[in-house]
Image 1 (cartoon, rainbow, N blue to C red):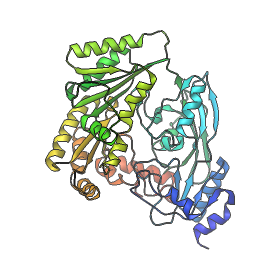
Image 2 (image 1 turned 180 degrees about the vertical axis):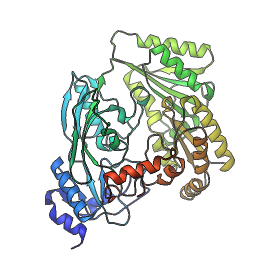
Image 3 (image 1 turned 60 degrees about the vertical axis):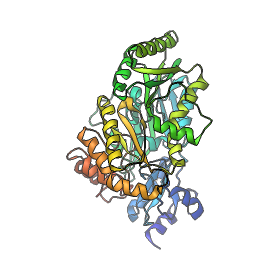
Image 4 (image 1 turned 135 degrees about the vertical axis):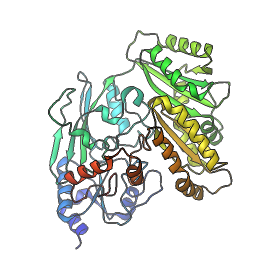
Amino acid sequence: MDAIGTVLARLPAGIVTDDPHIVAGYTTDFRGVYTGSARAVLRPRNVAEVQAIVRTCGELHVPLVPQGGNTSYCTAATPSREGNELVLSLERMNQIREVDRANLSMCAEAGAILSELQDAAAKADLLLPLSLGSQQSCRIGGNLSTNAGGISVLRYGMARDLVLGLEVVLPDGSLYSELSPLRKNNTGYDVKQLFVGAEGTLGVITAASLKLTRKPQQSVTAFLLLQNIGDLDEVLERAQIQSGEAVTSFEYISVTSLQLLLSANPNLRLPVETTGNHYVLLELATASPTLNFNEVVTQLLTELMQQGLIVDGSIASSGQQATEFWHLRENIPEAEVRHGGSVKHDIAVRTSRVAAFIEAACSLVRGASPGSILSVYGHVGDGNVHFNVLAAPGVEPQDFKQQFEKDVSPQIYDLAAQMEGTFSAEYGIGRVKLKHLEQYGAPGKAELIRRVKLAFDPDGLLNPGKVVSV
């Protein structure tokens, strides 16, 4: 019996799934661009079983790939094609252990689905502010291991900013548990943050204590047409000042992205009558029941129009209309898929340089790949631009993607680096961006990551081939 067979024989039958048809559902990444191989999926029901799995695999030198909802854009949760790894799915560990309303915190197991945590917080009249397009299927352990971003980073920060405590099974099977939801805990190194964004390469997150906030009593959503893309940062600044820093989302949408969406779904309509090239989806929220937010936003839009910063604007008159506004932003990726898919660039620069990056990158692509379609949108309030490029009509998408990624994408990453930006704002590294970290990461960072990996996991058994090469 080989090492994998021995591992499977030692573990309780109730946590081993080796039916090839079921296993296949865990071996292809979220975007469908990479399919790996695994003989079995291990689905523990509690922390002790996770420890047993990790310890047994360590003894027999069998690599493990931790997996939450498998929604990574960088194949971070997908096994390799060699078939020498086992998948460790946390999906059955999905309990909410505690909601402490007075402490504004919750404790949940790693397999809990994000939307269900949001619902649990809402029942306590609180808000879990992490919000993603995949929140109906992504799981909190994966969100933390990839340091997920989403639409509310501007106000509440990335996933790591919501972590109060973690429970983690380490590569030797021992347990690090510091789940007490304290705001102040100055006892040496902030060890928990090592595991946030590590993509399961240093340990398996099994539970987390998370910050909650007061549930908004009012929110206002507006859809704006800008005069010039160069006015993005000024419009954001005005909105933040006018609202008393209550802006939760400030999303840029290019006209091309909207055209892709509208052509894929002709029943959709723009919320503004005037057409142009640059749109913004703005949302503000407050826990105060007394502030007149509608008046604040109406006055803001009036001032922006009078000063020529926006050409047109519409304020959602109901929750349903706000949802329709957001539909225009959140369904752009699906529209790109319907048009053959895109080459994705998850770029971040300073918010003061977002407009300059978009203009320079668009010019670069038009020169290097004439006729290609630019779909540019993103969370520009926090400097994150999804700079996506699609094949021109009549061009075979797969051939285009391969050629573009080889010839043009490096120029886009070079541009981001020249503007002191990053090639990975929120998607992480996974398998597909390893070489980018070596080339574009901060000086010395890749080596420091390697040293940390070797200190925690000297045999390289946890999620090998992701984030770091050892």
